[in-house]
Length: 346
Image (cartoon, rainbow, N blue to C red; front, side, top):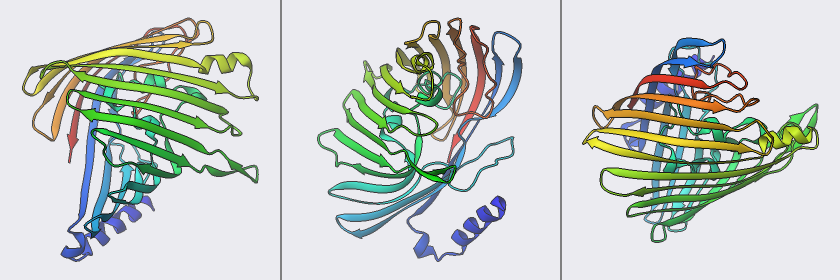
């Protein structure tokens, strides 16, 4: 059924008049890697992983000089595995933009999630910072359903985002309201890129109440060297779990990293990130180093090595997020990942 649905979408697009298709773009990303993953205990294997690969359609239509309509439909594609997903699992929305900024509605990354961007040196790879920031029911790096978001116009490099998600679901026959408010203040100008974000989620049947603050920044020291910093604090409350369980998920996460261009198309990079939980023996620290080479504007290859050093009861790994190869970790063990990847953006 899913293959038929995708075929219908592509066929309909191909059948549209050229004029109607003039402002529609087909885009995507093919991102795969070969990894050796070791949880420090019983698991030590080589994997093929698809890392947030995607196919999408987006369009823009000018209504007047000061008003335009836009849309996007994006689907995750898992190279090498059965993609058991429905259409439009990734950022999918429709909206209006103009002198007032833009408004969109649909399913897409929250302002809090997007705010990690300035410091995200290893996104969708072994060593992605979400392996320490997106933990359990207190996680905030989400793509929420039923979201309305407003983005202000650019104001001398500053812009803000305000998102409100209406999580209307049904649990045991009852309607459950789990609304989430997410906002960020962003700056891009000269050598500086930074984001400060706040998010709060009402308590629901499964995940509890969550509040988080996040800061990510990047500073271009020279044309060749960029330094990044990150800080996140999350407070978790849930009356249905023990205080010890809440303390495991209430945590501060912070770190530093850098990227150095050693040639016009080649860079080496590294990051240190640590997570300090309120509960004893649940801290984790991740180290990542890598090299990336751009074959051209669309295609790049890279190699990374990442390690998570876990306290006695912590079970985190450097490979859990944004990948199809995600074996579980082992409590108290150092988890390591060595990866070679290819990414093609089209």
